[in-house]
Image (cartoon, rainbow, N blue to C red):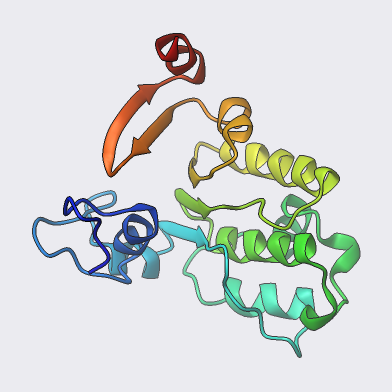
Length: 188
């Protein structure tokens, strides 16, 4: 099932369990009282995976609009494009996007259903510095609406700068849990 030698799920397995893409071998997973499948269908959980493919023939606007219409209470198309900093790229086909631009489209697709929990897996991979700054600004704006943003990253400076709480997993074990300042202080 993708567990580590200790039997504890690693990062990718944990993300897949939360999304309902894998089933736990024991125990249960609930998000706001719902199983992962139901939470995703209801628009409670959105995810930006690090390697999700885009439909190449569609424009950014068409792609975002198609996905947002799958949810019961989606964000408005204009709001999504603004949060993801895609307004200027709305007419561009997905196969004409650069790496960081594609990541911003993945972010737009993840927030399209207005999820209360947003899961980001290595969200700034392939982004240049300016794209990262824009991305985090949009993420902070999204979270300011009372939503939870959970992100997995290997970029410790991003965890330090953009999170209220940091959980460090090392060798499949919880190594630290607290604010970035608390973890730094404990690391000596």
